[in-house]
Picture 1 (cartoon, rainbow, N blue to C red):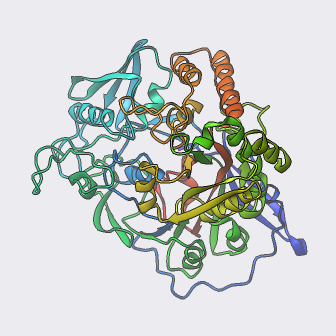
Picture 2 (cartoon, one colour; picture 1 turned 120 degrees about the vertical axis):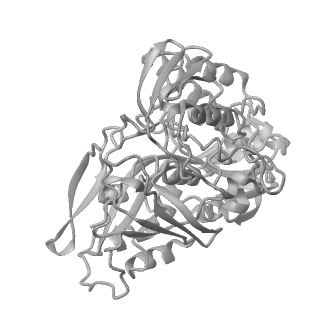
Picture 3 (tube, rainbow, N blue to C red; picture 1 turned 90 degrees about the horizontal axis):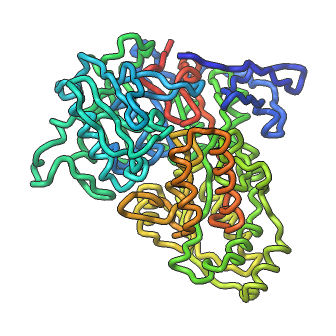
Length: 551
């Protein structure tokens, strides 16, 4: 695997220096010390934690802020789902750290005609159940993705997956589509024999039930590097190495994984520094220096592309149908202040969906905090005296999510919008989000296709149950011009013209105040010395733990 890291030595008080390893994003580098605007202090003198477990058995004890809500890779299009998919399943192809694509279950591929890409599959691969992996499983998985509420919008440009022979399959689009290979990173073939038939409850095993119990939500058979051996939702997951894993060239040597969800950031950090766990994510911005000063651990930082934003439900609230009100809310929210104070500069305030270096990024669109302007717009719209709204946010999904929500509520009070705020764990929050249970809701989105259109398809296109577009558009924003322009970009191969069109879309969304942009959230992971997370983390925040080395 090709890795591009820069060793950055940041001067610290007392004349010392400390190397801090940072991953580049699309050719850009940054020094975390400069980005945060803080000064590293000298490392503390500390002894090795007495409770640290020897790594001779190659067991990884990891702690995230939450565990996957379901084992079904098609139930939720979330980061946790995709992280789990890379452990228990394998994609046809996957992104490298340098943003090239590498073969996985597809050994190679070729463009047969403008609408058809042929994938040649690996032979001799088996699922955890022992069933052989074939092209039938790819076609079956593709068809299931097409009926998943969360995923079908991604695959709308595709006509079908066509079986050619046992180890060859074609992906066919309705028209020339430049992102076919990007989309192949979402295809994690499932064990069609394992997931077919009727379960003990008389229910189809291939059923996709959001927020409900299904066979696929509680059973798993993939081709991935790890087999799930124990699960207690919200408490613990245990994995063992797949003894028949096909990737014999992988440097990964982790035999077992113990996954413990730890919601509170400070508790998660304490578990790492005490030696109770070996690897944590995310690292709270408030603890970056504390971890960096500890010689027993490594801290990896990366500039992120996950947008955090708020939706304004125009179906629930007539006030939000007035563009001036939406603009007033955007002007009232000091997202630069949130990025600086709450995120401790470990985020970049956003004025649009597309981050820098994405084709759709429009340099002219800046964050726009202006309280006087916000009050003026409220007065022009006839809401000078304000109104009351409900707002919901998770409290363990995004970095400092509940703190951000509280800050926004306080900011909106300054333009006489009274906010009734409720926060909750993500397992409960996603049910409320899907039900559009509040006037204002928080959502974060990372485009795993690494393309601007992925933001648009899910967050701002007119909601359409048939196509799946607008699946996470909880604001019920609808603009036919935006929808038309997004559709035009899908078959454009001229990157310059495509970028111009994407940037035009961003300008329309900006003027419409289609949502309330907050920031692009940066990424940070931490691990004990000897746990080489630098080799397996990436900007998609999907660590390839099957390739993880432990000394």
